Image (tube, rainbow, N blue to C red):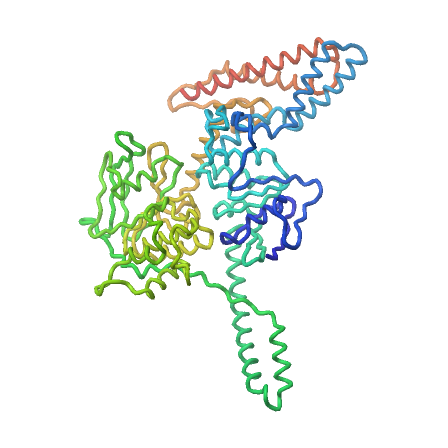
Length: 630
C-alpha cells in the first residue's frame, strides 16, 4: 500500500473503497495499534485523537456503572472541578480575614472556569446525545452489563462525540443506529467544528457531512473535493480521461511493438532496440475496470396482472400485521403496479420485516386483505440469508435455483457467465458457501433470487454486508429489472435510486408517499427531530444556561393552545419559572466573580439558595411539561 493524503483542521473526510481495501487498517495505523511496513503517519503535537471502531471494547469493571454514569466519565476534568469547588466551599466555613479572601478568589476563578467550560450544561448535553443516538429514558439508569452489543457500540459513539476531540476517526458509526438516530448523527457531524474521518457505506450520510472524499483503491489514495455525489461525478470524469489515455497508450505500444518486430534483425536494429528500452521504461496506464452490472435477462420476469385492475399486481387494503393477537402495525393501504418499486423504511421494531413475512405468506394477516395479480412469482431475499445452504458450493447453489431447460440441466458455462455478473469468477465458483464473507453470501443470495425468474422481488435489507461498489452494481441491475420490487432498507441512497414510492412505518401505522426517500425526507426528518426533542425535554429539564425551551430563543416556556381550547400552562406557572431563572442567573454571576459579598455566611447562603432554586426549577419544568402533554 502506498497511500498518501492529509486531513486539515476542520475538514470532514469520507473514506471509501471496497471491503478489504485497507480503510480500517489506516485507522489502526493512526491510533498506533499497528505499525506501517513503510512510510509514516504524522499527528501534530497536542492533537487530541478520538477513535470509535466497529466493535468497541469496554474495560473490565466499567460494566458496573449505569449507562449515564459511563457516558459522564468523559467529563473527568469537570468532576475534578466540582470536587475542588465543594472543597473550597467547605474551607470557607472555617476561614477568616486574608485567608478567606484568598479562598474566595480561588473559588471565584474555579466557578468562572466551571461555567465557561460548560459545567452547567454538560449533564444535559450528555443526555441529549444519548437520546439522539436512540437511547430511552429508562436505559440511562441500566447497568452497562445489561447492554446489548449494539447498545454498547452506541454508548462508545456517544462518549466519543461528547469528548469533542480535535480529530475523530469513525469506523461505520451507523451500524447499530436506526434511521432516526442516523439523521440526528448527520446533524451533529455536519455542524462539528473540528476534523473527522468517517468510514461509511451510508452514501446519504456522506452526502450531508463530508467536505472531502478519499478513495482507497489498489493501495493508492485518490482525493476528491466535495461530498459523495461530487465524488461520483469527478470519479466518472477521471475514468473517462483514464480510459482515453489508456486507449492512446495501447495504440502507441502496438505501433512500437510492430516496429520492433519488423526491424530488430534488419538495418534499423539500433532504432528497434532503442524503442524496446523506451517501452520497458514506460509507466503503463491501467485499464479502467468497468463495474459489471448484474444481468437480469437470464431470469424470465413474467408480468403479473391483477384481474380487473390492468397493470396492478398487488393491492393491500386496511392490512394489520403481527404475531398471534398482537398487532405490530395496522392501517396499511396501497396499490402497486407492474414495474413499480416500493421502498419501506421506519424505526427498528416498527413492523417492516413482519409486513414482508406477511406478504410472503410466512405469517397470516391479522386484519385486512392482500390481493395478488395472476401469474405473480415472488422471490424473497432474507437479510439473515437463511435460504442459503451453507454446506453447498457457489455453483451448486445457483444450479439448484436456475430454471431447468427442456433438455434437463444447465451447462457450467451458463452458470459461470451468470455468476460473473455477481462478481464470482475463476475458482470462486467452487467455494463452499460457509467460506464466503457476508458480502459474498449476500451477492450469492441475490444471484439465486434473480436466477429463479421471479417477477416480484421482496428484499429485506439487500445492501447489508455490501460495500459501496457492490451497492452501486445492485442499483444498476435493479434499475433494469422489468418486474416489481418491494424493498425494506435503511440505505436511504439506495431507496432514492430504486424506489418510486415509500411506505414509512412508525408507531403501529404505515404512511404512504409517492416518490423516493428524498420526497418524504422533510416529513420523516421533522417527525424524528420532534420526537427526540420531546424525549429530551420531558426526561431532562434544561437548566437556565442550556438550550432554550421556547423555539424563539427565549428561556421562557412557549405556550401552546389546542384548537378551540385554553392554554394548558398557566400564566402564574410561567411567571414563576421566569423569575426563578432570572434569580438563578444573577446568583451564578455573583458566585463566579469577586464582589462586595466577601463574607463566608453570605457565600454559604447564596450557595444554598442556588441549589434550592435549581431543584425548584426542575420540579416546575416537569409540571409545565406535564400540563402540555395532558
